[in-house]
Amino acid sequence: MKSNTSWLDNAVFYEIYPQSFNDTNGDGIGDFNGIIEKLDYIKSLGCNAVWLNPCFESPFGDAGYDVSDYYSAAPRYGTNEDLKRLFEECHKRDMHILLDLVPGHTSVEHNWFKESMKSEKNTYSDRYIWTDSIWEEPQGMGCIRGISDRDGSCAVNFFSHQPALNYGFYKCDRPWQQPMDGEGPRATLEEMKNIMRFWLSMGCDGFRVDMAGSLVKHDEDGKGTIKLWQNVREFLDREFPEAVMVSEWGEPDKSLQGGFHMDFLLHFGPSHYNDLFRCEEPFFSSRGKGNVSEFVSKYEENYEKSEKKGLICIPSGNHDMDRLARSIKGDELKIAFAFLLSMPGAPFIYYGDEIGMRYVEGLASVEGGYGRTGSRSPMQWDNTVNAGFSSAPKEKLYIKQDESADRPTVQSQTADENSLWHEIQQLIRIRQAHKALQSNGEITFVYAEKNAYPLAYMRSAENEKILVIINPAGREVCFECEYAPKEKIYSFGGEINAAEGKISVPPCFSGFYII
Ligand code: NOJ
Image 1 (cartoon, protein in one colour):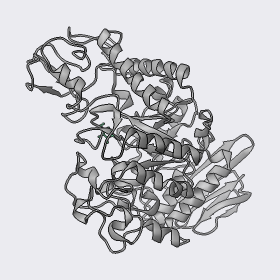
Image 2 (cartoon, helix red, strand yellow; image 1 turned 120 degrees about the vertical axis):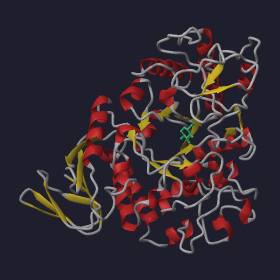
Image 3 (cartoon, protein in one colour; image 1 turned 135 degrees about the horizontal axis):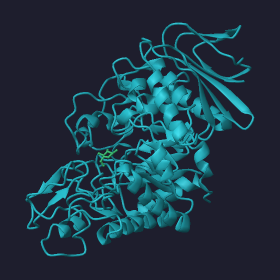
Image 4 (spheres, helix red, strand yellow; image 1 turned 120 degrees about the horizontal axis):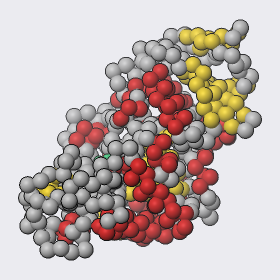
């Protein structure tokens, strides 16, 4: 039985890159059955929701973010029936599952695009953004041109094989630009709703939306795109009120207004997310030379703008970023997860991050991965052949695996009670037992000074207040704090000492205290 969207409050997501998770038919690529087989594993970690990367028919020039048929599962993963079974198996376990919706562009191999390339006017002529002469390029967007008889250039949205779907322009200044309420843009949006309707009726719980802020063009303040998503939310409220929407947008003030439940804090744009884990001197390194203050001030700005809804998701990583374990290691990872699992908004754990999977260096690009390929290598389950991922010959694996002798596996991590895996499991359990630590609990920062450690913040909900203290630095630090910690509910790396309005914090430490 599904409940309403309040499940998001204590949701902890697990992102699955289907290619690389678990292969049950021995072809070297993961599949839906493989995911079903591992749902109990995901649940045992404490995650109760899944975000599945695109799994639709595609020529895989961008790992499936180049869809050629939104209504069919890619045969490499299984059938629509198998995907439906995956939804059901999630629900049986009280888990939820979001699909990845790619509304901004398709593959050049999509039938819509093939039709739209024709010079004769047809149903799909306006499905994409075309100029009305091959000699005019759509400003600032990149384009595809000269590949068909149509006398025009087609705007692209990402790679040059991903033509931009047409949702219209907020401001039109050329004759070929269509307004949002033009016939072509309206038809594109209606079709996107049909796609959502199709998968929601089959049982998925909602969508992570790719490049959600990119749809309406010439829309600097996002007003048109917000309006478009409000329209989608109205449709969902009418037909699928329980559908959950999480955006890849990175501007929560806009996305939440557009009706999204949550927005990702992203590694690009002005978020300072990379200051934490992925820069020369990350805050979470024990070298202790990082700076968390700019991240915090940006976060506070977004938090205020989104009316303290706290629905900004901070992922451990994703299929576009370097693996967390590329720049921080060992206990640093445990401390990073204490932060990730005690912040507002639902946490997202990228598959394999829970065992500290490494970025595989020096790989050739696979399916449009380029530098991202090293973060997409197959999951390491155990010490059997191909780390238990697949029975295929090693050369047939989707991406080469980490071949180091000491590569982490689920087997070794679950057997060791001091492992990262067990730390994360414990942190999730604690989060789920305390409302203040969950998605909607409020946050106020207590200590987040420039070039200084620790980071301290207060989480609160109803009558519960929890002080979180995070000190990744390998040195003892001290900060002024008006709150006196009462009961400890979690600690890693020693004990704090609180006296006379000051708290001294041991090196490489994280702890949660009821106030
Ligand atoms: C963001 C996705 O996360 C990324 O993997 C993809 O390449 C682009 N959007 C284009 O869809």
